[in-house]
Every structure is written in C-alpha cells, then in structure tokens.
Length: 112
Length: 114
Image 1: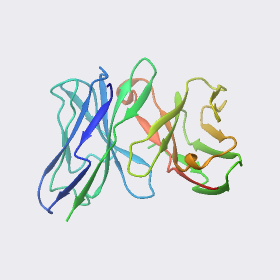
Image 2: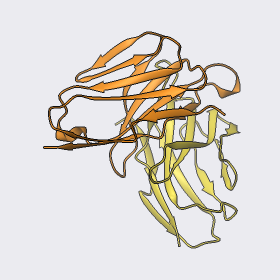
Image 3: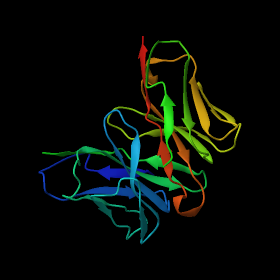
C-alpha cells in the first residue's frame, strides 16, 4: 500500500517533556510538510522540507524542530519551548507531477 | 502573510440540496486545492485546479479557479449524509523558497440532515 503513515494516532505527554512525532511516506515524494490544526481552525504550516537534508521554517516554527535524513521520513519534535503544544498534527507530502499535497491520518498530541 | 477567507463558516442543509462555498485571497495563487476532512482524520484531496478560469468536476463536486486567480468556489450537488465534514480550500504558491507551500482557509463545516 502506498501512502503516508503517522504514528502514534494519540499521544499523551507531561508538560516540559520533548516528544517526537513520526511521519513516513512510500510515495517517493521529495517534499514533506508538517501542519498544526487547532479546533475550528485551518491548518498552519510548521516546517517543510523540499529535499533530503534540507528544511525551512513555516509560519509557526517556534518550539518545534525537524530533521530530514531520509527521503521517506520527516519526524517532528515538539519541544518544551512550545507554549501550547496540545493540537492535531498533520504530515503531508507533495506530488510534484500533480502539484498537490497528500496528508497522513494525523497524530493528536495532548500535553497534561 | 497571505490570508484566505473561506465562507460560509458552517452550513446546515437537507439531504438532496445543493451546496456552495468559496474562498477569496488578498493575493494571487497558482494552484487551488479543495480538501475534505472527516473528524479525527487527515484531509483528503477532492479537486485540484491549475489554471485561471478552469472548471473541474469530480462526481457531484464542481470547483472553479477564479479568473483573477484570487478566488475559488466549490459546489456539491444533491448532497447526501456522507458529505458531512469540514471542507478546506488551499492556495499554492510556485517558485522561489515558497515552492509548494499551501495557505489554507478556515474551513466550512457541512452538516446534512437526512
């Protein structure tokens, strides 16, 4: 099956702890993205990567970090510096040929 | 930064009715995308629009890329209960360091009463 996987589906952490969210794709897409979604709001871009070993900050990068060591993987770390980390996190990858983005199923992070 | 205004915020309709929603932008986009999101899931791509004036259909869905490149609309005909969800528009830039970056509207929550 081709697609984007995110794990886990639900994640609970204590305040002050860093947490890493996984995103893997087997679509052979070069570009990958991380978005945050809060209730009743649209998606906001956290970080994106257009190619392996390269990434750029999106609109709300503060308190987050990423790495892109492999084409298939784009993990997101939510650090203790993120003031309001509880949210639904979505990963996407981009089909350059169709100029579109496809999303994973999301991870709901709750910080207690 | 760029902003998208999507309207309406929510709609409550009877099964069988047609639905229309739209997005407007303060600046130009090169691609418009429409997504549907079910609760607790990732958005699913419905329609992609690539050219100003383009009108594209996908089953009961029809979307258009505005001539000015600053707006787009989505119509759903003969709605059914499984159309329930949140619909998002997204505009995409091309070129430079923003290549492929999407800007999303706030979403339209659709409720269909049987």
